[in-house]
Each structure stands twice: as C-alpha cells, then as structure tokens.
Image: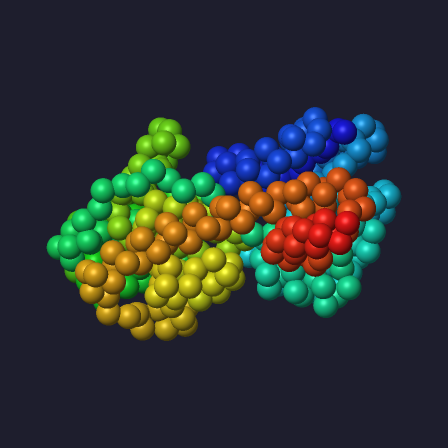
Amino acid sequence: MKICFVGHSFHNRTKSSDFFQDVLGELGEVSVMTSSPDQSGGYADDAIVEAFVSGNFDQWVFWQTEYVAERLLPLGLRNAILAPMFDGAWSRPDAFFQKFVTCRFLSFSRELHTRLQHLDCRSTFFEYWPKLAPPRERSYSRADWSAFFWERRPLDVPNARSVSHQCRVLGIGKLAIHAVPDFESDTRGTQGYRARKRLNGVELTTSDWFDTGEQYREASAAPLFYFAPRRLEGIGMASLEAMANGQIVIAPDQPTANQYIGHLSSGILYDPDRPYRLPHLSEGQAADLSAAARMRVEFGHKEWEADKERLRSFLLDDGRRWTNTDYSAHFGNHIRRQLHQHKV
C-alpha cells in the first residue's frame, strides 16, 4: 500500500509526528509532503494537489493539515484520514468538519473526538504516550528548584513574564527560557528580557536554537519543573516527554494538558485566566509528583502499545469490530475474545 502523509512543515524540526509515521511505515510505503497555513499565496500546496490528481497513492493521511484536505474534496477525496489537533481545530465551525462525510477522523483530544461524534463524523480516539526516559538523579531541595520554559508565543500567556511570576509564587529560584517563538514576527516580544539576569526576582538564563536536538533535550530535561509552552495543545508532546523525565509539568487547565495531567496527582494545572493561583508545594510533595509523572507515563505507554492493534485496524479500515471508539477498546476486545474462547 502506498500512503501519502501530509504533515505540518513545523514538525520537520520538532519531529513530533514521527511516532505516527513509524506506525504508517509498518503498513506500507510512506511518502511525506508538508504544508503550512502560514505560507503566503493561494498556490502554496499545488504540489500536493498534483500528487492527489496523479492517483499514485492508496491512502491519504492529513496530519494537522485538514485545510489541505478541504481543497481536495471537490477533486474526489474519499476515505482519507484526517488527524486535526485541538489547538488548531477548536475554533473551526461545525460546518467545516461536516464537509468530510466521506472521510474518517483520528483524534488525540477527547474533547475534539466528542465534538466530532456529536456532529455525526466518523471519529476514533487514541491517546499517545512516549517511552519512559532513563531515571535521572534529582534534588528535591527547594534551594535547587529550577524550571524550563520554551516561550513559543511571547505576546500571549504563558510567556516569560507570566512564567517567571509563577516561579516566584511557587518558590522556584531559577528559570531557563528557550526564547524561540513560533513566528519570527513575535521575536520583538523577547527583546525586553534577553539581556537581563533576573525577571520578577527569579534568576534567568536564555537560549536560542541548539545545534542538535540532543542538546535541547538535555537542557530542557535538567530542571525539576517544566512549564507547558502554550495555552492549548494538540497532543503536547514536549510536556509528555517532560513527564517521562520525571519533571513536574505546570500547564493551563485546558485541552489537551488536562487530558494527560491530573492536578496534584501527576502535575499541576492552573486556571489560564488566574495563572498565579498556584498551590504551595513542599519538598516531599515535589518528590511525589516527580515520581507520579513517571508512573503515569509508564502506564500510559503500555496502554498505547496495547492499543496499536486497534490503530492499525483503523488505518487499514479492515472492517474489524471493536467495542467502542475509545482508547480502552483494546481491553474490551481482549475480554470479548476470552469469553468467546470459554464458550467454545
């Protein structure tokens, strides 16, 4: 089977869709094309349109590029797989999704999945969890508390100023800011603190793009605390990787962070409209949250691996019956098999 994966060009750098491309690679030959809604001009995706018209692919997958799929609908797009992300899809009108009556949706956000089902769209829900990272020696002494924050949207909250104030409230004395916004036009929002050593009373260091991904991962994984970079996420891959490292993720109480993180059980969630209303943490609580984050990832990754059979079934559209469209369906399917064997 020949598969065309249409992804977001931003993921060429972050590699956040690689895990899914690996699953597709188990099913057939995958060709990757990329797009960005920020590209100017009405003909930016013509190469994708030409590839579709050529008819050389058996399956099309649109990863956060449903706007490209919309362009292909008048050309006969059928049974394609759309994987919209909550942060980019929440504001789309219902009518947009209802156009895709001949396609299927793959949802990593429970809230988006529920909405699509209410719209009578064919949606299936999965929950991705990464592998657990090797254990890391950490100090939970308050004197050593530090945090990492990738400031992707300097003009919005969370940003450097709001996060530094949150650090002050929580008693975190050091903050490392990765000052690389999503859009070059937003770099003006970082100029006010780049040369400073302290911000809101918190010791400050800043970084630009690292030479390698490994350097970034090491720098971001070292602090005990990790601030989620945006108010809304699609999956929130960076936060999941931080949890796998035993970091305490502090995130807005919004999708998809509040799907993956339990407040004061595996991380900290805050009201984005009242970001400074945060709990007081003891050193013991910090140690417990760090351990709980790793346990949550360990359990979640086992569930993800067990659910891959259902994912492959969905991607192949092989007609197999599952108990439901939720990520726990693999367990229900297992129970059904066991009952069948006992009856036989």
